[in-house]
Image (cartoon, rainbow, N blue to C red; front, side, top):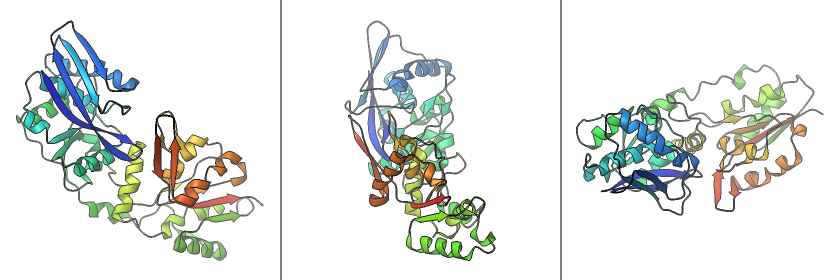
Length: 351
């Protein structure tokens, strides 16, 4: 029997739909995953098998083929565990097709069937809304982040059997809802505020001009003169994030796995201060599976480079494109990804 489950992946900071097709056929017991799966996706068969059995469902002793379409898109991460498991259960005839067509599923499974959080949920929910899905089934710990997106039901689940019973119409789960306005109530609370600084009028003036015009800034002075202290207080005088900017910033942090389960939405302008020993990929972004670097994590905020002269020349040269274009493009043989990187650069150096 064949079952089709809707899921998604993240490419850059954009969500892309993935259709998980599960076919159970007569033959010797086997479990094959096709569709350019990475190692974590190939390993999902062991997690899925244990989770299904430990939830009390019968794992079919037949030939199981899982196809992740489109097949030419490389699949990475553990977020396919839940849709694959639900697809196997659905292929056994337990879940009707009606709800499967209206909901998108994402989540990692533990061996006991618990659903664990995954990164990149916000771009995936935005993609689900764009494609007209009624709702998304997500891990409980990702629910607040996902519920920031209005116009789509967010169904939080803690366990595989919850997802199966909801999709089968056995139980009802109240969709997660958040008041977006509450996230912005704490915008004016800063750990480091420029109002705390006494004196340093010339440095304050420079910060005010930089904040007003979005200019980059270089502090030069002897150790202990307050360069780092002043730079850390720049976000406190920047304009508040708009909802659109907050969603952009949260999307980047979601892909990087830096959104806390109680946080949900990034509402303060980021301040990133990488150490001078950082690598090219750490600052600009990259890796085997390209991830956002510090320039993207500082999007809509401040990137502070302390001890500017200690940074390697090639790393500083790599800042040219993001400073000029407000984005950074990471090219690989298989694909080319772009990450937003519109930030204010503040640097500090000794004379």
